[in-house]
Length: 436
Ligand SMILES: Cc1cc2nc3c(=O)[nH]c(=O)nc-3n(C[C@H](O)[C@H](O)[C@H](O)COP(=O)(O)OP(=O)(O)OC[C@H]3O[C@@H](n4cnc5c(N)ncnc54)[C@H](O)[C@@H]3O)c2cc1C
Image (cartoon, rainbow, N blue to C red):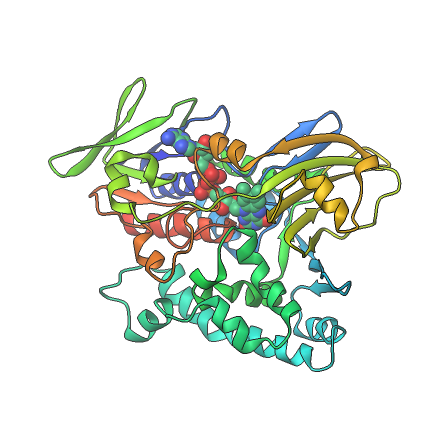
């Protein structure tokens, strides 16, 4: 049995801790903040509540696998609900697209309404990711990445020089469809020319497996964090909140402890589930990586005459706004979150009003959450490492790191940010650490 110390109590840290405890290790989880969850959290004002981070997830199978492998199945803890609509896009020319999930046929009809033939072009673009997905799943997402043993075919695909920018220009004849395909990556703060083409696989996952969420009345996506925190208690993980880890202590070439303001905590195995640039022993190995910048966010309580928006609406323009509507609100009111990216020279709600979505007079509650607030609160960006071309694949740590005894999980580790990938990173760490 190894003494495992997990650094960071977000989804990545909690998932790693639950899996390793189930494998028989003695696990301690250290979280700098007052509570677990990281970006899986909730902000509450009076009768309003909003998710602070994730509002939905792709690939619910990843969360299901985590709960099943660490105890009671997820279905016994909470219900992930399928969302019929992936999102609605409002384009600058006044046209709109309601993109349905989990159905080729429904996407064909919806996209064709933008222009004849566009539906077929969209389906062909998405279908081209089927092979990428199979390869990624088998050799990158579910197996520890090792550039030395990977097959030539996978190596070529994962380390492709083709950028998503180039792929979209080649595959999609319509600028609006390119915006739709680019959105998931741009919303995370990436620049398409720096993103490998296969990262566009999100469009395939949305079409094939759909988007899933936890309704606000059931606690919102934060409930997933709460359920996982409860799982840590069941698995007898020692959780210490209010403890910031400053570094990994390395003696005779391997990790033996982590350093905190209150002294060292001994460890045979350390799992770094935070931005490794925060820990000097690891920082030297990720010097060339950059973090993504979270979007400007504002949580709004609105009431009165407001447009009836779906769960997620993207308004494209000089800046792009993503409006999610699934928060908890009293009768007659709505809880929206507006996230803005791009050329934003004024208040987000004013800038949104210029696009025609003007709710300024209907706002009854408002909570601002700037990129700086988010990074300070979570000790880094929950969107992980910025794509800087294909080199990012190998420069990102995880599941192993160059420091013996230290493993990396979470948004800044392989295979990246977003709940499914963060969940997979924890599974990869559990795989390489192995049973006690
Ligand atoms: C606004 C927003 C919207 C999002 N929407 C979605 C979505 O709809 N779907 C989706 O799948 N994903 C979404 N994501 C991404 C997803 O939420 C994250 O990728 C995921 O939650 C990251 O989990 P994590 O554990 O890696 O990091 P975090 O959640 O950032 O957790 C890191 C934890 O480590 C702690 N910590 C930091 N430094 C230290 C230290 N030195 N010592 C001890 N503890 C430390 C922090 O306090 C924090 O609790 C969103 C993210 C954001 C910010």
